[in-house]
Length: 318
Ligand SMILES: [Zn+2]
Ligand SMILES: [Zn+2]
Image 1 (cartoon, rainbow, N blue to C red):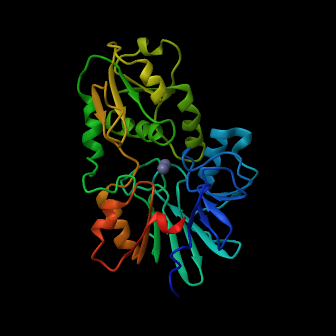
Image 2: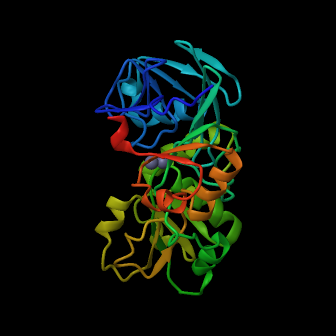
Image 3: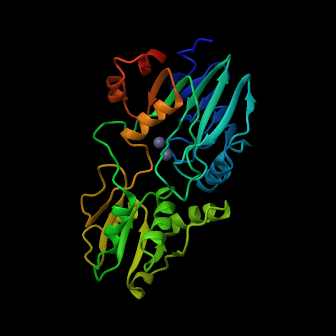
């Protein structure tokens, strides 16, 4: 069967599958939403019917409470289900707890939406699984030859220098904070980990879902002054409030080349695929067509321009 180049179309609400009348990670509430993972730029509140993994359902309820969505159809990894004639199976994407790739099988072709993914090891996400596909719909957040992620061990070692001060780490609330907690326990076992209240709720969801993070405790007022050799994890907006404060070492954890402006330590730890990982995904999947979403995909288009791989442009699908 021929690949339908417009199997996924771009609508104002987000990526749309006309064959199955559903959206992938819609940006506005819709009637049928297949959701790859619980980050805010992929999972919005108030969809009428949500199809997602167990971990994503728990995290969406933590994030949105009663507004998480009308009805949840919770689908374990690897168990196919039918959605208006399209056969769908979720596979782990290795990005955060519950993050899924969405395999859509239709009229003999396999279309794979990866959502955000990473191949790098992470104890706090179900490990990425390679899936064969005819067409890939993939993120290209960091798909540039300039982006090669450094080793996690080397980044974490930066926290072990003897500063004689406690360390404040700015980190995203969902995903990165839990991974950082697990990594600090592994690479800096002498440190006490304190966690901001907005992050602690997500920590508990992970632990209740059977994803242990190691030792940590919720931060209470002035606790930082009691401990020595401790690390306090805070979300970016709290981190900003401490700008210029000399009482502790300031670090920021992200794969983006930003957020480091006033930091003593940059922790370049990413939850997205780098250039090599995107190329590996394309190679192992065996895809003959690629649609790049999240990022402009121009490096991918350039890299494959003389190959037989069909690079589909956004503008063709609107
Ligand atoms: Zn994400
Ligand atoms: Zn994303």
